[in-house]
Image (cartoon, rainbow, N blue to C red; front, side, top):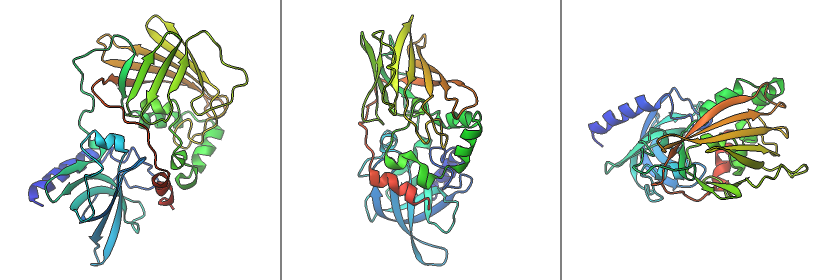
Length: 336
């Protein structure tokens, strides 16, 4: 490992320090601290919802320790060069990461790593532009789209408008016991609209179908004039009906099932939750603006009015949903 590598890692650290752990819970990691460790890979789990690398290294006292290094979804990492064969037991690497707040634990959130052969693998937060403006332009909202990574800002916005009940739930939220992701429960709406995972939109005469690569079933928006059923069974994605206002798709969704983080990290959603969305294509056909109004008087003091941006990405693959329950539980268990 040559000195040029250290120059590269230094640059990556400067880029990563403000953002690299935003995709993960701040309950575990110190986003202001950075560690650099050399060692040998003992295990590599390229699975969802988080990739893990285990590295045997020498500690300051000269003893042997094993680091557990967490990274992102396989869908995100595969788009920046990772594969299931990127690492093998016995590989010598040097990694740079944000360590756990509890320094007694050898647990960290990856920024980047380099193998002995010079291969550099980074976290998704240091990704290159994932969906550069394509030559092709969409003529409608139909097609393949990549949302911008806007869910951290969404978390901040909802946390700022909670009522007393919402604040109490937020204050009592514990990652190790309350995180629905530890049970492979998909991210709820509207958070999912700000997750950087590919979405396909299919426009039919009587419905619009949105397929997201992080959900096992598509979302159906009915355009046939029906209303919401009065006694529908609440579900994680609710019941959606839509209408066209010119070229703008307007969607109204109710009948959401309660969700422990349905309105942001640690803020539940209740049976009164209502979501209104407006999907509008940009003039140049390369972007969608998804304006939304989120209402949930059980936990929010006022409606949240905001927007997510999606980029046209016909050249990208939609990777089928997968979530490994054992891997999902691992994050929760390691919070103890």
